[in-house]
Length: 449
Image (cartoon, rainbow, N blue to C red; front, top):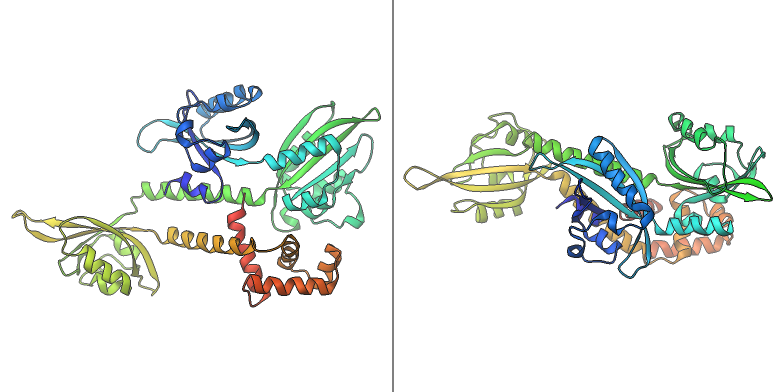
């Protein structure tokens, strides 16, 4: 499975560009669907040519900068047009990579559709309506700060994003800065440094102060407007913790993949025609928790579980062609390890079948990810059966709130909460609150974007 295919599971676009021309060399299905086109129609088209005019030179500059500084990443948001000419806003994360099979540089990028968030920002700029419900669903909070005022106005969701009590009123700038990670405070100070000019838009990212709880990541936008002859700063703050964690996990996965390739993770063993291990190298032995020589004389079928043993015996031993299969082999500590096992015949000088060369690659982590993805998809399908109100009640339950608190927050009766709770247990086939929480958290993997 390619990285682009893996990102399709999370509705994240993937593309690979020529660093000289910004021509699209590879795209995944999600990216092509974002633009309403077929992948083949996008091949060799210049990414800059698909942008709105005002962004074309910027994407060229981004690619040029990555050619010169290949260790960084660049995040940009661009407006593009779908095949039906409707607009779509995409948030790109560009990185530079060395091509695996040649000494060449390629530019890769992920793309996330942020059109709904941009629409929210546009509505806030034009009307300054306080869409509490919309902000809660998208985890976006908004605020206003009038010139010469010590404090400003915060939306309900902004209090929740920063774990603050709304009854205490908006924080002063000094109180707010205490909630920010010390390393990000200079960014906040710089963004709020005058002079301010009507029409200015400033975007930045920051994280929460770990001294006040689990770290959370935010993306913020500030724009300057004029009201009664005075400058008003208005802004939105969105919780992007899941996106940041997903990007970090993907980067870590790619790093591990490269380490596997570099370290030659494949182990090799020689088997006789009956499947007994005559010799195994250190890598093969370590996959099964054995020292060098510890597998000598063992029957590989006896080390495998029943289904894998039958597969090895029928499909991989005493055959005149190579075959590769995913099998489960017992580790020395008793658990089963997933191996991609390839068995090839060994022919002696007399052109006779003399034995078997077995090559193994540990794919246990990948199988665990596949299982987790399957469970997440099943959990998401169950959650899609819920009504909007049932979803709201479930979110409150997951956050550990009691029925009375949930009733007050949602402005419904306690009996109604109890009825929704009962319906949740039935629809989601859960026997306890712990199972509800586990199912909701599992489904989050499929909605991380």
